[in-house]
Length: 306
Image 1 (cartoon, rainbow, N blue to C red):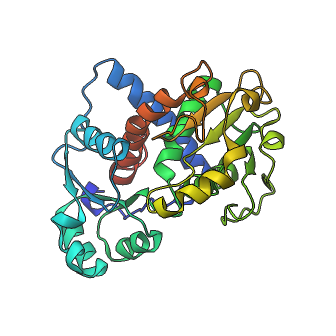
Image 2: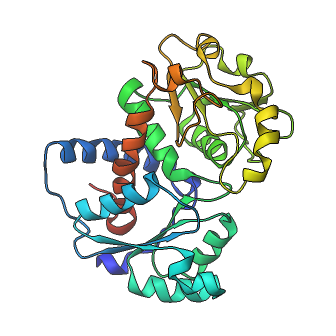
Image 3: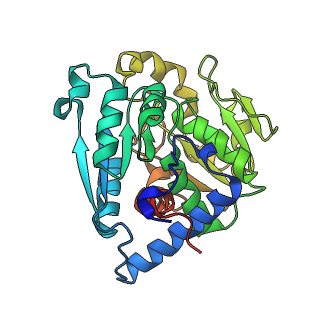
């Protein structure tokens, strides 16, 4: 099949992949990382173009996707609301119809998840969710790759999510469904996730200590995300007991890892000695955005690697 006639697949959440596809993608990401470290030139996306639509600012998302396309032999175009007619009120459907005829794949980092779904409905190119208000699946690819590299299969393990039931938390719920790990979510009243889980693998609670007991992986995020700046003071008060510090980590398994999608606020959601300490996998996790997204781009544009 000609690559440009390949059936369109979007990646708006982890559930756009099967469990088998997700496991294969993570292994492929590890292999692509090994190839890159060895200096292997591999350019499956030669002359292909990624259009990147940003409503929210970014460091890791922009740099990792641009670098991925360059290393794969292609290119990337950064588009902010100031650079496009979207910022002047052009309907999403019209932008999708036009942009997807000019580029090979689109990555969107937006506030509204619904706007990404609408764009995908009218797009002739695959659409990737680089972040939305309800999902952050690309970050989960990096987190899961990191755990696989450092500790092996996450199936049957216990993950503690400490803090806001936000887009990252929702994507962890999807990951638990797909890969079969137990997820304990500890959030203050009023901040629990809304994402549903039918498997019984996810437990919601308010006590961060109970959530962390014996956990193999402890994860947190900022207390106030982009767009919630006016809630920052109230959230600091609500989440005061949810800092991941040494006392909390001591309740986890002795071999437990700590992860954070970044940027981090030391002294708020995480103590400096944890994020900068021996159990932290944060920097490997951040780098793996590049390798996991390369595997994703390859899958969406070229199909599974045999």
